[in-house]
Image (cartoon, rainbow, N blue to C red):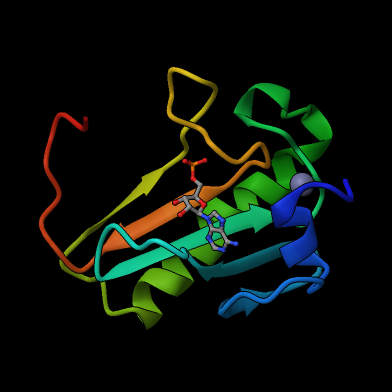
Length: 114
Ligand code: AMP
Ligand code: ZN
């Protein structure tokens, strides 16, 4: 989608600090980090939210959770632990309508989240 900020980052039309990229996925540093490590991992394909995921997307999502997250967690030295968050919809706190996984680490996380 041409008016989607994360689609534009995926196409490198607007700048971001990219920490990982492959055919289907790109990961970049969050502009407003909420922890010492705060990376956003997105499918390059525009999927508006977790509610819009279709069966054809499952391979990409498994790739993110099964390969990209552990790779980045290792690279970012998060062996003490980390959190992956997918805010979904208005009450879920989603502000950018392109599916993204927050990878947060480098400090102790609190529970319950706000
Ligand atoms: P959410 O509130 O879960 O939709 O998360 C959106 C995230 O995108 C927030 O943490 C923002 O700080 C982050 N964000 C928004 N615009 C950019 C951008 N241009 N580059 C990097 N991160 C961004
Ligand atoms: Zn998009």
